[in-house]
Image 1 (cartoon, one colour):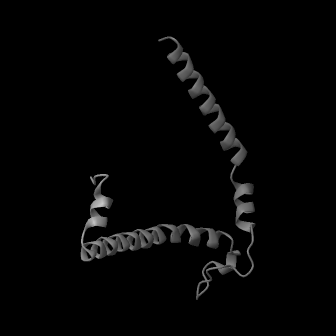
Image 2 (cartoon, one colour):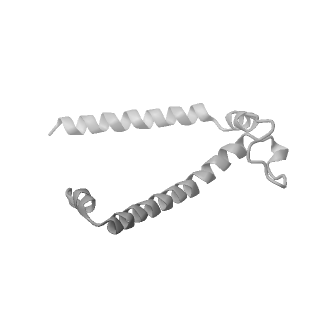
Image 3 (cartoon, one colour):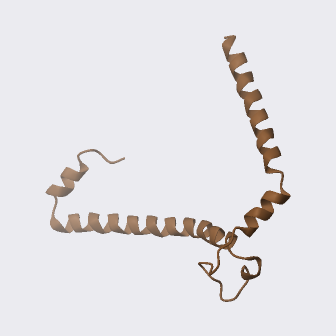
Length: 108
């Protein structure tokens, strides 16, 4: 772990040492930014693909931003999957679980 006085020590050090610290910090931030981009690109691609019409999903070359965004795929999922039933089941499980926790914690 670094001590709290390290920035003060760097400020008092030679210019070459300060340049090295700045370069190391810059490389660290560049690596973190590159890693962040690698992590977020699949999510952006997923959102972009979900907004494309059915026929435009597998076109070559792929379109990053859909020309005609549509919510058709979301409507189809909402029609075929019983989302309200799933939400109701989740609410029931949550209420029973919290009530059980409160009941057993109150006895202590």
